[in-house]
Image (cartoon, helix red, strand yellow):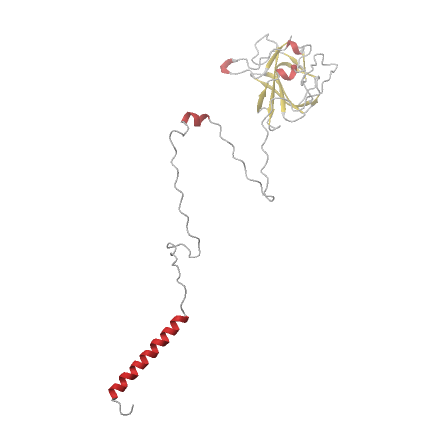
Length: 264
């Protein structure tokens, strides 16, 4: 080696070093070899990287005109109620809806006869004119009146001065003299929901006053022709109304009193 040409010596050393490096690289690459990894597509911009892949949107179905209901059917079709989900144990129950006004008395008044009430009927209300029987009544509730009005009451024909009787227990809330009704009485029933109106009276019973408790069959006034009844047209105009506020006794929903006096 000492007698070897210096240039040849350098070349041989370079070959040995290159071979050693090649062997070292081969050994290292064999130890660190891994399985190929499948590339994962990056999520769209603005979407978190750890979010699940977005599902493709389901295309909207275009309704078939032949299957679509006509406007006339839509207007008359009854909607199918959607069942409500099961209520949570901690959910607050919704308030119950207020019941619609009934056109009959919720509790019939007692069927009694009193000394003053010779015309007591088997219905929920007594006939309010002494001597008149239920079968003598005429249903004039829907009869037409002047200025396009509906009667909303019944007329009971009787001679002037015939006693007018309370149809049920209650309280006199107003004694009033009006142009159409003449001498009138407003009576509030004990249920605080019904008001009885007596009109065209000749006069009140002695000592009758507002706030007075009265009983079924008690004489409270006398038949007359005051107000717009017409001279000599003696009769009692009687009506019943359902109210929501006892203080507004004049503001209620009219109820036909005829069946309330004739029911058996």
